[in-house]
Image 1 (cartoon, rainbow, N blue to C red):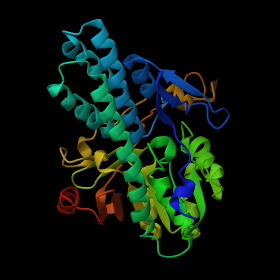
Image 2: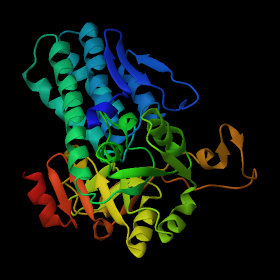
Image 3: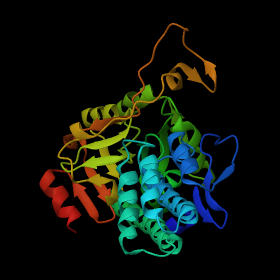
Image 4: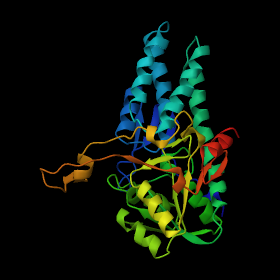
Amino acid sequence: MSIQDYDKIRAVEWSSGGLRLLDQRLLPRLEQWITFSDALGVAQAIRDMVVRGAPAIGIAAAYGVVLAAQARYDESAEHWKNLIEEDFKLLAESRPTAVNLFWALDRMKAMLAGIEANPVECLLAEAKLIHAEDVAANRCMAELGAGLIDDSCAVLTHCNAGALATGGVGTALGVIRAAFAAGKVKHVFADETRPWLQGARLTAWEMVEDNIPVTLIADGAAATLMKQGKVKWVIVGSDRIAANGDVANKIGTYSLAVNARHHGVKFMVVAPTSTVDMAITSGDQIPIEERPQDEVLSLAGTRIAPNAAHAWNPSFDVTPAELVDAIVTEKGVVMAPTAAKMIEMMNG
């Protein structure tokens, strides 16, 4: 078996009718696709987590620019460049933490300078290139990350950094898939990942689809799992990595890193270089999205807390670089990341 045998799931597709997204809010109960024909719909889909995961958000936003360009050019062949600025702003405001969103929008905006005629064909080619590059980066990271795992073992992952969160085989789950294909990973433990339950609904679903043994645990059980020696690696994705190697990822990642260091468990972060933000010196500068209280106070539409109770709902936290054993990108592996090592990796 090889990584190609586990590269079957896709969540983002371009079609003649527009951008098709697998609605991740409904998984695993229902596999339903939604087609979007304008930038407003794409921005709302990103905000509402129809599509989620930093690389997938960037890809969706790039296709959203294509839809915006078509509409604005039809509106005014003379003034479309001015009109589309509003669409760029709309897409940029959809989620604040995932830097891939802004990276993709900047890349699409850079294409506008040389375009005078109908921009759709040129912009669509660039969006498809962004998508294809992510597919290739996923496979490269999968092999690099799997190469760090020496012995047959079980691993723990948090949230969902798989095919559903990217354009290809996944970041963290790409590594896990490659390591499983090579006989290095024998079992996957997945944190349920409150409050959206991405681990329970999405990661477990991906593993089951690929016939990879998976056991779901409550987030609070991770430390005990490590203490009992049941896992040798924690493998996660990221939504933004600072220039010094600090990592922003789904809330709960920081506590996993602290527990992993205490118990002698290795901690791996897997993300494409589009997730690395060399413009910020540390994780203290990463904006952390806070989502509605109701996501914590309710479950599947049913309130689970007293009416007078309040909730704090940050979507992400920042893991300091000193708690990270390895950052894996398509450009290479950074062991025990520092600012100097990050610069060297980004320079290729």
